[in-house]
Image 1: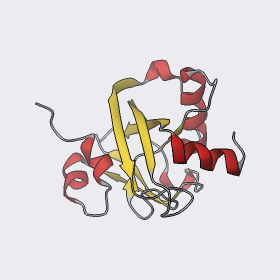
Image 2 (image 1 turned 90 degrees about the horizontal axis):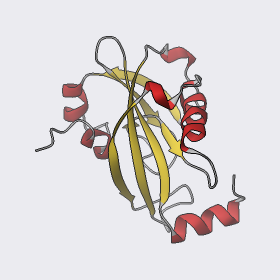
Image 3 (image 1 turned 90 degrees about the vertical axis):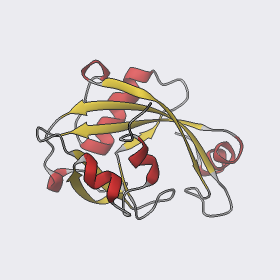
Length: 151
């Protein structure tokens, strides 16, 4: 992990590489958490996190699952959905620095108990079906993009 000053410089000058987790339960609903930090503060978003320098993808995936879901998951149990770009007008550091993410999105299936999920990045959780996700003004548009039919 970087110290505050180094991380601020990184966010200011380079894109971050991250993993988003599209977690389906047995009812084909998707796990969403209400973000408690910028960017996307206050919106429902899929769990995820950034990859650290010199961290192997497999290790990052398991670490992010443990941090976001309380469960260490192997990347081999997930399906790669694709690569996405997210651009935000703000960042963890406030409105004066924007954020650019290159996102590796993965799908997995697991029924998580919402009351036992970590509260570090999200202060509330819910399961929503695809239709609810696409219609809700409380779900961030970057999360909605994972469910838009591609032509």
